[in-house]
Image (tube, rainbow, N blue to C red; front, side, top):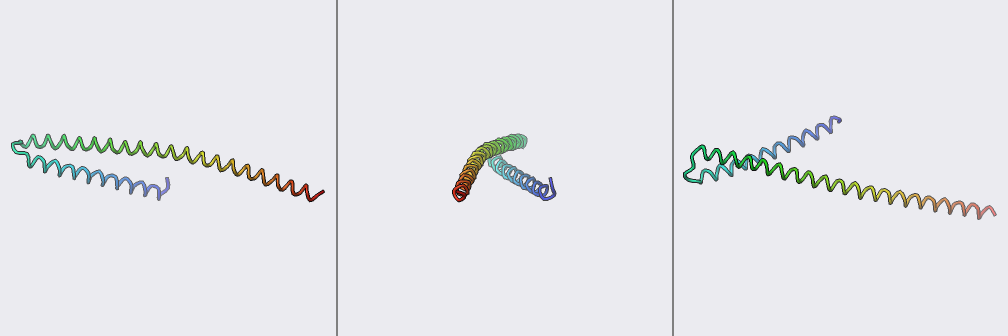
Length: 114
């Protein structure tokens, strides 16, 4: 991996980290707002609810990320298959056109020789 690829990968990693942290911070704010409005909860109960909710958000984020990655893999595989078919078709057409052109040239040469 060259330096520009490494830098691009590093930027992607930083972007993913910042997105993840922003998501967790937003989730933390939501659950803190919820527990603040729930009367009668002890501090320990609030902490338990917050912990559970944040773990749930991590799980959901992981599942969504895996789903997106799986979908991208399927789309990439389909693209490779379609591109391979297109490439084979193009190669076949080029071979046929080349053969036709060679046949035409031979016919013209043979016709002018006689």
